[in-house]
Each structure stands twice: as structure tokens, then as C-alpha cells.
Length: 72
Image (cartoon, rainbow, N blue to C red; front, side):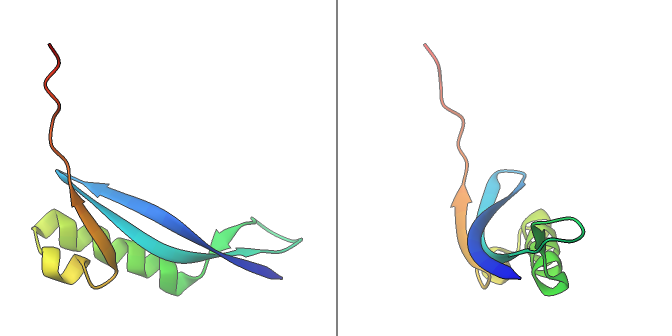
């Protein structure tokens, strides 16, 4: 079993969170996959962003605010 760290991006509304998770790779099943803890972490971040609770979302990683770009 091999583990590697990867950044996952969670987009909700005008915000994006960059969250570090560990991918698990093995020779059986659906590989690579997340641990249940990391899957719940991504769900918690998405819920916090949906509610506008940036402080809670920021506990898991970096938060970015998206702005539209005006095209001329």
C-alpha cells in the first residue's frame, strides 16, 4: 500500500478551498482512494463554504474567493 499527499479543490459559490488529502494506492479495489476521514473533511469544508463560514473552512486549508473577469 502506497500513500501520497495531494491538494484537492472544493468549489462552492464564490469560494474555493485548497485542502491537503492523502491518496491511498493499492493493487486491489478502486485505487487511488481517500480515507473516510479525508472524505468527511472534504464534506465538512464544502458545508462550511456553502454556509459562508470561512473561519471553519479555513481550519482545513487555504480559502480563495473567485471574482469574474470582465472581457472586453
